[in-house]
Length: 195
Image 1 (tube, rainbow, N blue to C red):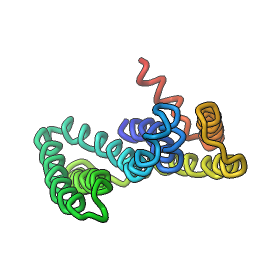
Image 2: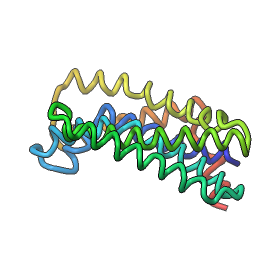
Image 3: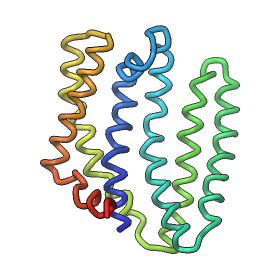
């Protein structure tokens, strides 16, 4: 079902969004040397909301395409692309914003695309809110899991490879526990997809 697919997408997209937003430094410390972390972590944090937006957009556009609207995803993505070009060129051209305009442009691009696709979905298929609503429970778990993880990070204040791995693992364990307790762990969906 569409809701089931949305819940499964939300289960993965929500923690990814939160990790990019709050733990971008830790992610980059694991992947790169420290000299690349400072600017990259800020850019990754700005880009974070786009992870959830692109997940919802992919589901909506896939359903619209399956319902015969083959050109709708292309049209909505094209509109988003135009918005990105306009916003990015305007922001990147400003000295005080410069490179920060690129992830902002990406966010605006997905936002424009998703608003168009949601409007068409509501008109042709049904209540688009059901797809968005499917993201709420996983998003809540992802955000709540941040609180104890950030508390531990702020208490120890260390930045190295092993500490970053520990912190991200801790977040994952708390998120999975909350997902299990809240019922947002999409066990049924994964079984259906496996068949």
